[in-house]
Length: 319
Ligand code: SF4
Ligand code: SF4
Image (cartoon, rainbow, N blue to C red; front, side, top):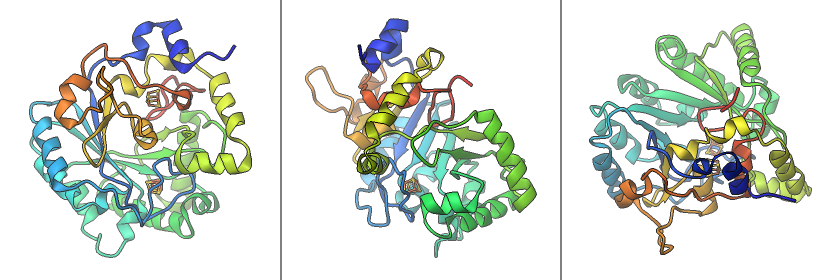
């Protein structure tokens, strides 16, 4: 019998299917991106038009006042291309937050973005940079021709500013196809050895993320007739040790219009957090959405978070 994801969680502990406490507010600034990666779960591209404006950014800033100690996780698309990115960073600088920016590295070599590395440094931002492999061929296949060389140039520049030594610079790996990531610690070891030996590049930690069966990656699987096989693989590799640590128990995701979701995957799927009457909650209702015990919006895609070592925006859950 096929049991739902919710059933699998509830069989271990009913609380695992509910919100616990707010530790991370993840802000997705929109779908504009300088790249158009084949695995992108938010279907971002240079043509992205759904991007956060000042009104929503101001609401986020005012809600973060008094939230000392939580993490502000800024993502996209390519968040640095949104004009509200600098506002959001500058306005939250004195709030005692850990502030993460998810960068695709290649943005550092876009025309007009020369200011960006110093801006990261000046504002004490923690960088999570996607680099799906240490081999140029694999990266260019996923991200487009030349993406690897641009990423290495960006990493060297960031290293020269102290990122990867005195300042936190993490890399994010995702598989190049319909399979689970290998061991996070093993991949980190290999990345460190290869990037240091071949390119003289260093970084802090490597985090592995399982490809979610949504967005452009789902389209790709459907075209190959491989979607069901991948969904079955995720369910078969359900790891009970990862179940209690799924990120949606402590994270809320905000979209460009201010609607709230249990995670960025649900956001990409258009599954907002709803009131009991079925109305979507917005940033104005953050306290309601973040109430302990509130039920999570779960679906079949959720098995990507509990397969193998488990997966979250900050890497594996049960390594
Ligand atoms: S995966 Fe990241 S870098 Fe690639 S298109 Fe999507 S948002 Fe942009
Ligand atoms: S996909 Fe989102 S809602 Fe589902 S388990 Fe993972 S983090 Fe939670």
